Image 1 (cartoon, rainbow, N blue to C red):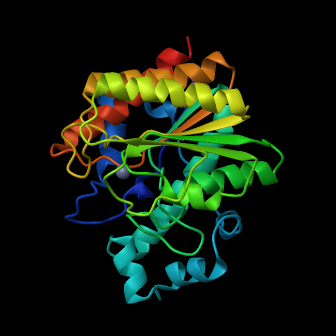
Image 2 (tube, rainbow, N blue to C red):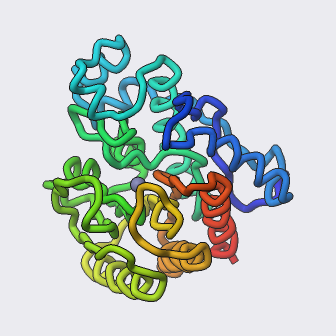
Length: 303
Ligand SMILES: [Zn+2]
């Protein structure tokens, strides 16, 4: 039966197989283990997705980019921008992450909330990948559900410390998808194409200021736009101990962030699907704990 009122979407193939790399792609398996160890979930709470089909991926991405990824014929410059080593398991992991986010989006319509133990690859563009992101799983999920007539309008709430440049670019002229990004201004990506709402945070912002800005952004977003589904990109990298982030949120501040996003969605009766995105704490256990806390906030929001 399971212990949870929603599913934890997970596939062992989510691991991007990066070896020694700042991106701890083993975190997905570690999060799953932590859920089991803490008796937060049991085996039947996990939902194993299929990989996205090429047809799904092509709803968002350029056929040439997709083909070069699959064939292993990316140029040197394309590989440099991606910043992760090329391998077949890496490519498969992106197709699985997209399949997982599609599954999570559909589950959210059924269960009100859902959690993909993966995804959130918000730096992927139509014709290229960058910043560890080759395929924009969140955009693929939105396009799949729109194409199938399951939703008309979606909102992306991106709380990763890095701006959601891929998301902003992909939906720039699309009035059916509303994009919100809260991020550190002086950080990657150097070029930030405009989201519908961008909150540029100065270095070192802590819990109180962050939560005020988030509350304002959500209020403005919901005043302008009523989505059928929210895709919440719950990056763990606004954490003060993050190697690639320059904000100063505490673990409890990040819990309050999750509660605010999830609460504001549930309160309005809008389904919300969670994806994980970045997290580069000096201690990977902190990244894992922050992501697990997001699932706990999802559980609390169900009651
Ligand atoms: Zn990030």
